[in-house]
Amino acid sequence: MAGMARNRRLARAVADAGMGELRRQLTYKTGWHGSTLAVADRWYPSSKTCSGCGWRNPSLTLSDRTFHCRSRGLVADRDLNAAVNLRNLVAGSGPETVNARGADRGTPLAGLVAVKREPGTATAGKTGTAASQETAA
Image (tube, rainbow, N blue to C red; front, side, top):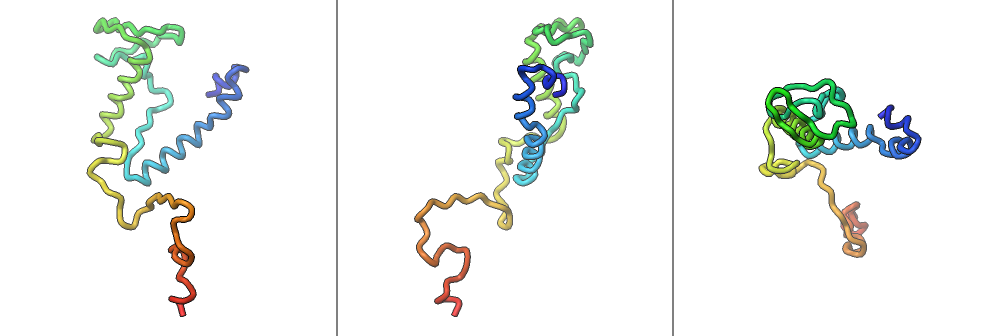
């Protein structure tokens, strides 16, 4: 982040991105829905590690767009190789669910449920927020 912020063309976009807020929201939402958030370490070498055998190329620079494994001979796009490594990292962290919420889980009865109320759908005194004067007396 600091390196990207030093670039005068990227500085405003990086500052506006709010990565800390994004992480906070993801943590909050996954906990709310009973999911887990897998976070890779800041220095995890996802693009410098072979997704097939685990060999690391410490001399790989940002300008190298293709990963070449000297141990196994794998040749792959650097970003694709990093994505496979991150997928493998998440797969090793615990059981995988069918979707982000877990297909076998329902919303708990006492849990928070998002409800959208269209304007004009509730009649006067029947909004559900308070008892009406007639029934309370």
